[in-house]
Image 1: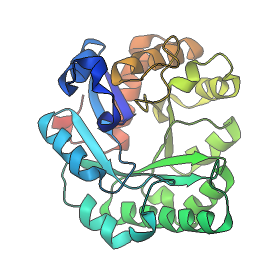
Image 2: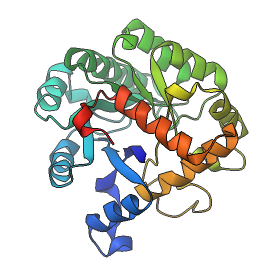
Image 3: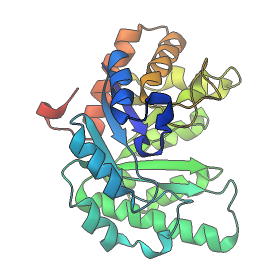
Image 4: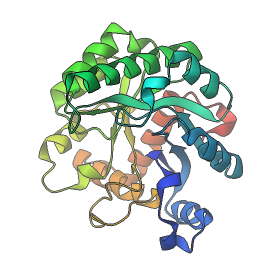
Length: 265
């Protein structure tokens, strides 16, 4: 069985699936996917994500604000804690982190770092692991993780796209490394090297759907069924069987996100 450890079901163009989310879920089931973590990027996402999770027993979700999301300057630790604590199926905080790729002026950087610290503190208070996004900001991301003792709660470096040195530092902070469709791209040699080296018990796989569809679907809309291609690619890189990668990453997900035994894939 597989887990899509990071997707955005609420952002899919359902016209590809006869305008029903059920067909997305069914397609995933046909490709061995048995659990989905639907990740928040805007604070108000919790309303639709909680509804989706209430309709599909194998869907869980997070609460948080992406570093480039809207209105994060108004979402402090108390507001995050209040909302994330409302839902039993909210199993994580995020996605949060730092993204300097397009927004790197001093005021924006300061705001992102303030919000990131709030998310880390919330995750520790609620004992819900973190989902961390970092782009063009690895040094500051790791520094703040250390300063806020993020290792006390742990979580996942989502859609990892850094090198082995950065991966080692994240692993030392009690974080899992999650591989998306990027690892299947021909030019992703540095990331493929990371996939070969990450300890088996510290890796996850994801789609980040509807973004970053894996080869051979690159450029098309991504969806949870395609996480199988990520698993197959990682298996090939590590010279292991697909079945072993599926089993290991599912076990890792259950451990990382502290799912009760009865809810595990």
